[in-house]
Image (spheres, one colour):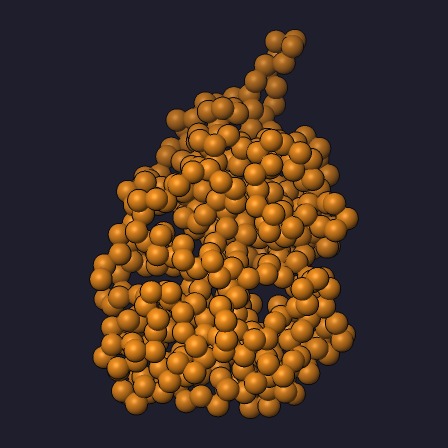
Length: 429
């Protein structure tokens, strides 16, 4: 079964590089007839769909430059494996970018808490903000009313399986093909069937760092009805019987490997090479990148919700938007807000920005993916969207404690002891 991407979305990802020399040069003239100095900004973007693609971003920036020749924007592309450390180094040494594209967990719960972000709460007074979904608004606006992110797009993270491998191992019967769900019991039965069929490494619990940890968190918390935080996002609830049971089950399951040597990115690479039957670090952009823009995998990828013992799964959502580092220059901050308003305001500009991301809009702008088979297939996961808890205080500490906890389990530490270590790392939070 081959999956098709809509022509519109594919064009955004395959746009040829645009020569910046074709954009209007120079600044604007002030009331005295002299040419004003252009404002120079730097945009740092994590690989948020096509926003991590230089050709796509070049096209978007060229369109912006035509309407705002007074603002010049250069781009820095960050990787999830190394981007956080790069930003941390910039915070210590200076030279931060002006605009950054990422999610509330970094912009608000990390850098915002550290006092290096500009407050964007005035953007929420714009007319375009009126239609932003309540769940997104709640994740982006802090209890004190400040906001360090203005949202662009969203998705629901999931996992993926090698359908061909499942069929060959007679494990496909454990999958609900219509709802893309399965129970914890069926998940474990599928792992056992794959092992019996000769698959030595069915899945990896990757824990070389925090990148992609939304997958391992969702796997553990869904298996037996656990949670990562309380509903109010005031404390962490990792140390629970449900989560400990899930970790004990995973550690004892033949074919599931706790691997401290690989990151989420490397897990995806192993899965796409056919070395794993499952990937826990997945979403629609991964499939677009590998099967539409890449060389293909040679097997059929089937996206799945994480296994759950009862009821619907609670999948982790991804929200991405723009933040502004406060470099002490009001002109730059206002110019950065102009850029954000351009990319997220008028529907035609906003649709283009969202399509470039290959994710979904954070407000209703019409059925932009109505004729897109792949986006419609992945759209089913939106019904399973769980709580956006990544804004809980001390989030950066919790993420580090999580992957270090998984490493300890892989090294033989009993899960209950490793979980107690997670709690200790947070000072009992």
